[in-house]
Length: 248
Image (cartoon, rainbow, N blue to C red; front, side, top):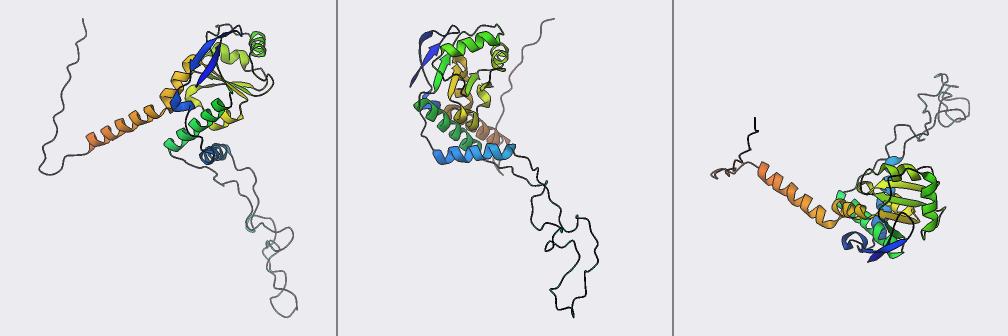
């Protein structure tokens, strides 16, 4: 899949191939929804808090005797059955909304999100943005691009690109994010994603399937090296590497 690449002047420079591992992955809507709920739940904080019968203000005296009145049995005025009493199962400030998901599933969900946006033609490329920090010029540049100015636009940077990040931070509905911190919410909510050319390589290194396989193999190797040898087996010899001596 190819996308158009634009320069800082807004002119089309050419096209570039998107990494197939990221932008041609199968679209799994259920996994995308699960990752989105995970992200929003982990950002959620418990605010609502009610008092139970032990915390609400009031006397602990029994309102009237248990038998002989002909009325329903009643305890203290703080009972949840009475008006002004405590709440039985209300929201508490110590509620924990955090969720967890394996890294492989999270990366697969992000690949599905990127593939969906690429399929809808919402991804552009950018090359050679100047080091000048000017919000006015950044706004003029966005108006020249084939994007819906005023809708949410996300710039994906390979790393810390202060000139571009500072130039667009005061433009409404425009934000920047590093490629290593891509997430389903920002990808799906964006009307257009503008990738710097180097950011495509960085995103493939972090979220591509090849990078995940290499990480898994290195973890397996480290675990295998840490396991002690069984009884009767000779321990493997570790080759010593000579370090060059520093010149005086």
